[in-house]
Amino acid sequence: MATIEQKWFDYVLTLATDNVTHGGGPFAALILRDGELIAEGVNSVTRTNDPTAHAEVMAIRKACEKLGRFQLDDCILIASCEPCPMCFGAIYWARLSAVMYLASGDDAAGAGFDDAFIRSELKLPLTHTRISFRHIVHSDAGKPFEYWKASSSKTEY
Amino acid sequence: MATIEQKWFDYVLTLATDNVTHGGGPFAALILRDGELIAEGVNSVTRTNDPTAHAEVMAIRKACEKLGRFQLDDCILIASCEPCPMCFGAIYWARLSAVMYLASGDDAAGAGFDDAFIRSELKLPLTHTRISFRHIVHSDAGKPFEYWKASSSKTEY
Image 1 (cartoon, one colour):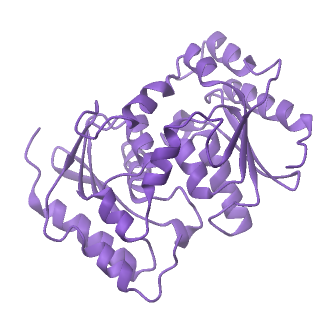
Image 2 (spheres, each protein chain N blue to C red):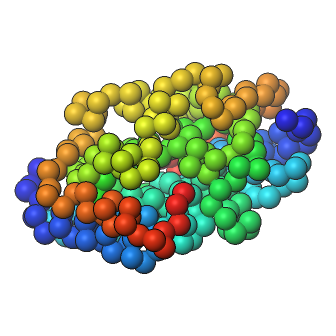
């Protein structure tokens, strides 16, 4: 992997810090391709009433919109902080080639953002999680997948 | 918890099946409050070039927008299929009170959606994941959190 210029690490931390001043959470993320900035995102959860609007998710959405595709396998993500499990999942679905992060999950926990709770819940069987997950038996549960498998016009991802 | 009417289970499966016909993935989700439909979402990844546009995320975003808040602790989510790790994280950040799902992760895997890979990656230390996660040491890494802790105008979440 090519060396990433130090300026991007400085920049993502500045974005994260400035976002607090603008009423957001202390997080930012960048998407780069070949050393060039494709998109940036800042935590916008409370500002936009969207609990999924973490910096990494915002940056991924914007990069995909800009590049007109739903995969970013030629891009890297730089995050001001270690991604939470939701963002980890988003990074995998977007198939980013690599991630670099500055602050650790422990640093975030020290500021009241305890992603570790979600991480530990993810390791439990769904019958034991704090939020109740109930599997409902239904005779048509497999029908959407049958249609999917039979469809000749689908776009796989 | 109040009994959920059977019609919602039928409806979410119909939405998921119809979404395949309309070029999307075979997934749908509903948000209910007191038995009333607040929002619905369908998988829109390929249609909108957004890898985070899973049905659950779409439904959560819409419900929050409609209710004008970023937490859904008085709502439940009904998903046509067991949520993937990204959606699991979104469900926790949205603080939904409960989740019900119809098809299992195994059903999804049988149709080519192998969320199990992301789940197993989440259990690894970040030094061992398939996508490289690199912790960059930076003297200002904690600065966004210092600003956050010192801010008197922040909205916590």
